[in-house]
Image (cartoon, rainbow, N blue to C red; front, side, top):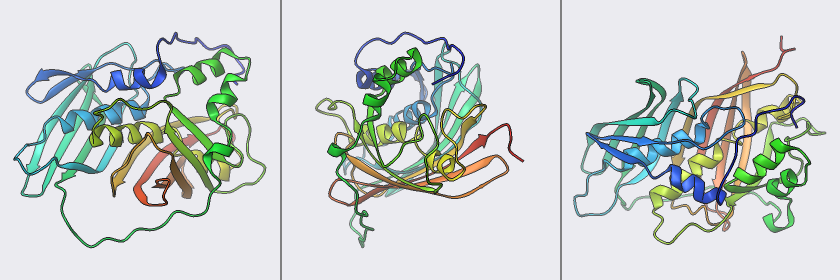
Length: 302
């Protein structure tokens, strides 16, 4: 855990409920919404949070023409500035297009009238079409793997206890994790299981499930880069920040159920690393694909 003391913010309430509260945005009118932020150790807004909030804001502007809800199928976003936890976030949605089958939105997440995230999202009516799907590789069942919540709660450190207390999702790596130390084997591949820490309330929409998947995956997307270069989250001087995030939802998803992330990093250069994840449900069906490039810097990098 951190070598120097950190200011550990207080937490209150069940962690997943806290996440859901941040997704309840206040409507300001004229396709504008306002939201608050969860506490973080680094005193900056968590990227997955503002991404999920932007998805919810854009979804609130979709048309209802009587033939079914248009489901989110893709997102492309850029993280532009670090967000402050003590400043509300304004979400300004622009209705770019509403066609017969698809709707497109641009959302800016703003603090002090400056964007911290700019995102375009696309939505489609449920329609028939040709169907094929890559199947999940073999992986051990999540029930036999160690939870990150268990790992952090067992460490006698205030920062570790904080991480355990705010975790809205249960994450279980297949093999070694990179929380405290580098893995013995250098590889750009990893697999992990993830699901919501507690069941979502009845009536949770598919849009909310998809937003919560976006929320959760931001914390693991760059781990294959760390693995390949013999780094861990505790490497001295490590600086990591999400730069952009793209995501595609192929089929309905439930974060109440275990989801398998099959990840790799095809490239890292210039202080940037690219992480790719294919997400499968427990039956092995491919439900989503995620790509994220992030800044990954260490002091001895040449």
